[in-house]
Every structure is written in structure tokens, then in C-alpha cells.
Length: 164
Image (cartoon, rainbow, N blue to C red; front, side, top):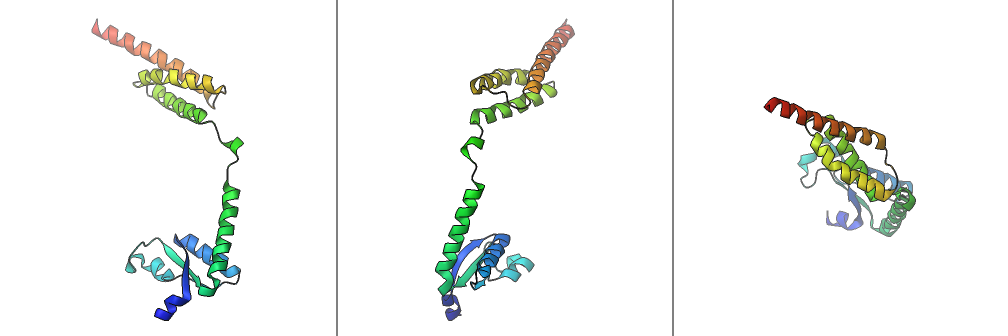
């Protein structure tokens, strides 16, 4: 057992699906890989103890440096491919305005929370003015604000009539 563990080095550790993908990737480059407890963790995950949702990928000692290089190159390429260009990142104020708008619509739709919608409205319209761009569903938010105002007036009138 001692000789076996000295011949293999840990190169990657993570979810079973990713571990198998990493192993296949390294094998496609001609490197020898070994995923210990692969079948046991799938069939009886709690039998081996530790993190049952994690597998290790081992490579032969002589292939370790090449495997690390390949994985670093793959990681750098994936990071570059998945990177969002700065021009595609929305203004955080616009994202906040969208969220406030959705909350305003929901509050107006629930009638009893119409005062909350009117409380949210100044913040929403202030953010929209700062950003200078109307977020999606802007017209719906305008209608929801008017509806909330009508609901508050109607609820107040009903309350006054009930007490007189």
C-alpha cells in the first residue's frame, strides 16, 4: 500500500461529475489517472466516510507536472470564455431599480400592501432618474403605482365610511 500511494499524486478533488470529466480530460492527453473509491461512492456513498459528494483524481507521479499544466490552461481558458465583458454588466442602480419595481408591482397587486407600494415608489423613480434609462416593465410599474394610490384612497374612504 505504501508503494501504491507514493506512485500517485492528487491533482484534483471535487464533485463526482467534475472529477470524472477531469480524469477523462487527462486521459485524452495520454496521462494515467486513477479515481479511488469511484464505484463505492456511487453505489454506497456513506461507506467510505468523509465527504460523500467528492472524488479525488490521482495521476502517476511522473505525469503530475503535465497534468497541473493542462488543468491550469483549461481553467484559464474557461475563465476567459465565461468572463462577462464590462459593457455587458448592468449598472447596479438599474438592477436595484428593477428589484424595487418588481416589489412595487407585487405590493400594489395585493391591495392590502398598497401603502408599501407607495412607500417604495419614490425610491424607484429616484433611481430611474439617476440612471437615466427606463428599466424593463417601467410602464407596468407606473400603472402599479397609480393603482396603489387608488387602492389607498379607496381603503381610506371605506374606513371613513365604516366609522361614520
